[in-house]
Length: 406
RNA sequence: GGAGAGGUCGCAUAGUGGACUAGUGCGUUCGUCUUGAAAACGAAUGUGGCGCAAGCCACCGUGGGUUCGAAUCCCACCCUCUCCGCCA
Image (cartoon, rainbow, N blue to C red; front, side):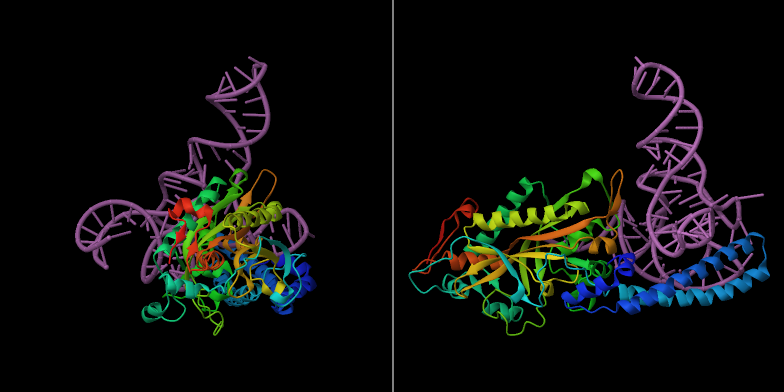
């Protein structure tokens, strides 16, 4: 949620920047409602004040009179409030100034390429072919038990997953991140507070009155709802492991092969709560940690500054890391690092207070490992001519083996 | 799942229809005293909304209701704790 005062004073800017992200909130209507709402608040406050005075001198006649006119005004105000909050919540977070303009990923700006694209003296297989050949992935039986876009991960690939988790936790706890395994179910109030349209429109995985999280961030961020951080509490950093659930509505026919795009996968995620002035610094820090981890696996990757149209509703800026996938001859997204500035903290009421300042904290999140896609990247980039797969050096101390043999 | 107890200002507690403008203790901050500190004493100390301001209003788990007037009475819900049951 944006600050209504900011919207009031920057109507043009809010409209322009929303449009850059592909949203068109009705700012004109919002400001109209805001105006009448404020006027009505004054009227209601005055009546309440009168009521208090009348009750003080036991003036029952006057009290009865005030009571009936107050009831009408209060009902009116309640309606206006509803309208106001509906409208103000339709305004997305604004993209920062150095976000590339453009409606889709064609406008993404590549800011770095690192590592050498893998070259093979043979025709490389894709992850599914490798996975089936070595009995590491079974999507056929998963479709039997669960439906399309699910998979069983098996044998050495399971150990490789656990190794990735350990690598991330070892590195990040050494950096001072607090390790956490969060709940994967959140309640309605929290889902609304996060400001993700997929929850608001019911497109997320909805249970009775709860939702399955799309990422660990969704329960780690609201951990601190209604709390105020002291100066020494910030930055507060978490590294969480959880399963992530995705509806993938609207992606019919896209990435249907194997486990590249599935409804359920495991992920290690970073979340930071920081002083607003440290936003950029923290964003770069999270990105550098992602690069460090991908670098340790020896995978070729690039970093992109995502275009405005690609940013989620609460996001002000996002860097993605894309790893080279040989079978697709493309870089594909495996990591993203976003700042949501104070957009979520405002709605979830997460503040900081230092000696001379107080306000809403800035909240950032970044992928440590989206495990499914990282496994795909490892399998494809480390495949050998005979169909076996080598294990990246950095993982070998966790796996206890250096090769997944044929 | 069953039974009971409870949710009040940062923490602990008082408050069962009007003097609550929510008291008290602890904590915190400032001041006095002191070479300095402690102690003692004094004062200040929640969040949010509206307003240029003076100020007004809201908030005692949440939402409704009763009343001229609600922290207090009524209804529903949420959460916590204790005991029992079940269970990885």
